[in-house]
Length: 176
Image (cartoon, rainbow, N blue to C red):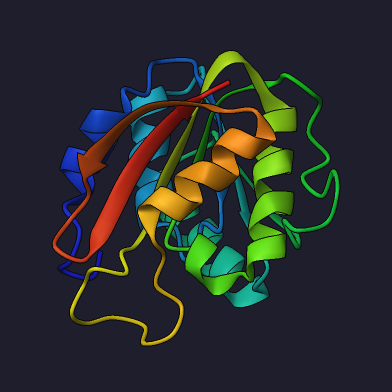
């Protein structure tokens, strides 16, 4: 991805399974989206959400060139209620990598609410983002993982575990 993350280790840690339904929040150009699509197989489905048309177009070009048919991309502002248009309790996983830092705190709560709404009972939310402990990266918007954890708990998630997501990132896994 950017040399700061080890995508294969992250995907392995997430324990995606064949046939899973995954919502990828803030998918960007889709490097991790494609790895997830491979993990969940043709029986699975990944819903890739981003606010930028260019990012989604890049993802769809890559998906087409690699022959992935299990990716559905949609432009959306995830801070808007029910913005994914997915049914309640319809996803096994919500994956959010390097997107929360781009949102103010009140929008983080709204995004967490949407993740909670679409996850099945027992579904997992995986968040990877810029750590405020990193000596480099975005200057003003890095996240304190403990404060983020508090926000997720307020929404109703249960904390499962943290993991090493790279030299400048934290990884958190929550369960609904």
